[in-house]
Image (tube, rainbow, N blue to C red):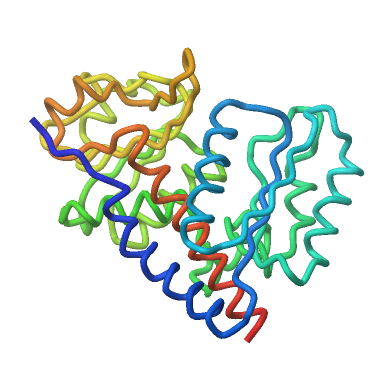
Length: 282
């Protein structure tokens, strides 16, 4: 039986730092950091995530400002909202919930976000800096993945790491962060041959494909660390990509859903927003 990686408890040290920072600002009569979230449509997983983010912001003394937009909004009007946020000096960070509806050009729209407020590392400027190893906002979900892996005490250097999923949001940057830690990294996707066998060689397995219950015990090497990034709404409940109950019988450590990566991701977003505040206000 493996151990559960508790994202909430690991995130707590960062939350305490954020709350202390916001409290000090408020006590000195200064405004506290503000994060704006843009959600187009009503995807269940995204709504769940945003609601948790608002609750956490309120608990930590951070100002949440949400823009809930109709799923049929056109590109021009969505860009106007982004530009409004870019020009609002009271907003320090902005997150655009992805994926966007298919009629919207995701690449074009994310490019309109000010890189100074791009706390989730979506813009070309931040991504370019990230992949070049320069100072940037590190994408929050991949950063959370790495923090959770490190919390287990596993030696990442020289280990075989497999990332299922090649999205620009999670898969690719998670692989890059693991590569930075000197792991030997394999990225798998829908065209990967003999996927189960590839995954069974992994000391570290990261599932980030948005297919609930896809990763079963047949994918997992005994003693592996398994990180579940999936958040899909199924019958009113959030489900991960991993069959938790059976995988935990084989793995050494597994993240739950909810309570794993999602808990850390929100905290990292708010932490990045505080960093943006410091750069832009001080």
